[in-house]
Image 1 (cartoon, rainbow, N blue to C red):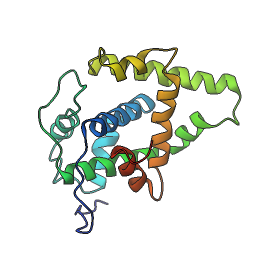
Image 2 (cartoon, rainbow, N blue to C red):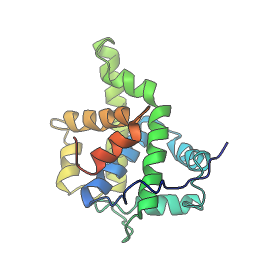
Image 3 (cartoon, helix red, strand yellow):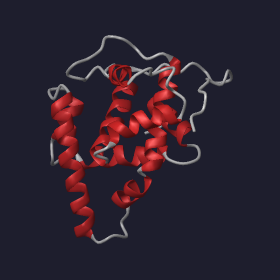
Image 4 (cartoon, helix red, strand yellow):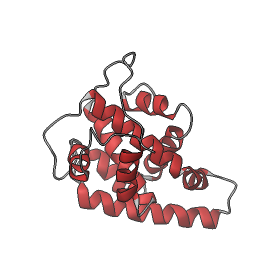
Length: 182
């Protein structure tokens, strides 16, 4: 059941900085690394949340994701406040959907062997997606791609997704993207 999407008039305009756009896109790529069907899930979430008027077709959804300055093929535009709020809505719904997997990755209660294997699969998929879509010569991406130093950065991506799930997730994610929290 789709809802009509409207921005609450009490919400301030949401203008994401360059680092906020990078973080938003990296979170979507992390979701793609976690869920092989995430492309279809994003389109479903868009329709389910009533964002079809904002993202009229899947091409517009992908094009707007390419506002990220570290993308290999970048669209030279910026997100409007409504588009930013809609992307946050979609990301939070997908994080809700993937929360059990996020919890398993972050859990210390599972056997180390199983947890290591899950992280290995995630790292391999994330690395492949980053190499395919991003300018890998950028410092932030080099840190993510460097196996010896990247575990904290990748864990932070998964933790941010886990915090975006559930009640209050949108507010936590907005604060994170605006640089108010890590």
